[in-house]
Image 1 (cartoon, rainbow, N blue to C red):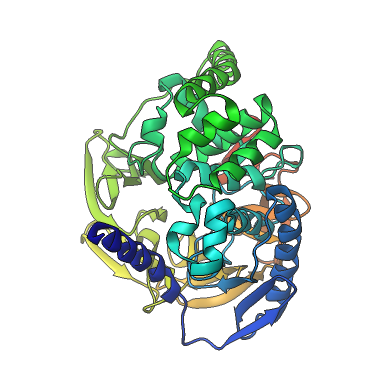
Image 2: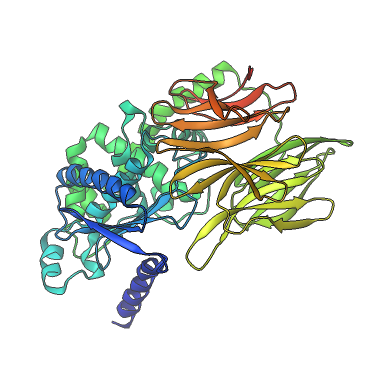
Length: 515
């Protein structure tokens, strides 16, 4: 009994931490619909109404597909307390989802969407309906004891099941939406197949091995596709129904055996075989084309971000952000002789740009107050080994030096809206160059060698992610690429051409003439 009580108190404490993640200093407003309460900060009613319309559509579709309608209205909280795209949902105490309004602005597995808010809402509302769902004894006892933690059976499923189902529901392959059809996810699973598929006993756990936090989404969504393809969507739904009737948690093998005729161990073997049939021909085709020769210059980088090279008197030197997974992220330097050293620790992933005289610009997340974590601009001077914070609560996501090192182009975020700013060398605002509307997102940027233009990875509702060139004097954008292929990470070279990446079933590096 003491162990059970301790577990309950720990669980309630864990879940209740998120209740207080919302800034109480804001003037909060609420609008109500048939199935929802939508809470928003004063001044953003139009955004809240838009979110409500999408969530009501999600409610209609998902309650039909998952065959469950929550008895009480769901609380939807629109949060602008971070510059990173994310959200979470929980049924504890009451059905609640917090949606962070910042859109994705880089290739981080979240880039496949035609409306970011819609994709986010459908994913999180799947959690609401799925985790709230109960049947049999749990449903009966909830009528007596209320929303007691252990009367929500689906909370106790492995995270790859809950996240896999939500990612499955967000995905529309025919429209190029969702992680279940993304080029990046396919490339990640090809690597898993090539290096050995992880056993279900490992995927069940919170893993630190690659791909770490993405593991539950990656393996989960492909498992749902495997089930749907081989057994049908109706069997997937039956599996959800059976687990929702568990009075005692963790009976995942019993439920699988009842629905599929086998428990998860042989089912996972079938899943492995399915993955190999799907991805091994792709691996063979890629190898048959011939792999481009390259030289590995970094080590033990769990995730490498913001790679930049600069020519010095000693030769070419490289800076990058290393996130090893074992310790805090670091700014790394590789000198012309190939020797590597860590210069300083960082707060996770960062954007970066170099200037030979002015130093290294970094953007990283930092506390603005007790409730908000925003991205700020920092300046690192290698010769002085000093890191200076240039902005306080600045909300700058991407930065690029002008050629003279006296000005900075920066991408700014505020409540889901993206703008392009011109800053001085101290990151003080000179001019607002461009203000985006709904359906316009700027990703990575780079200033041209002549300082007259800025290239950006730009998302527009009618075209997805493409490269565009911003003429600073004219204040206008010109498209460089068009189409549905995701283009990103543009960078000028000395002759004015642009290097970038793009996706066309596979990921490629390319070069184009900016003219």
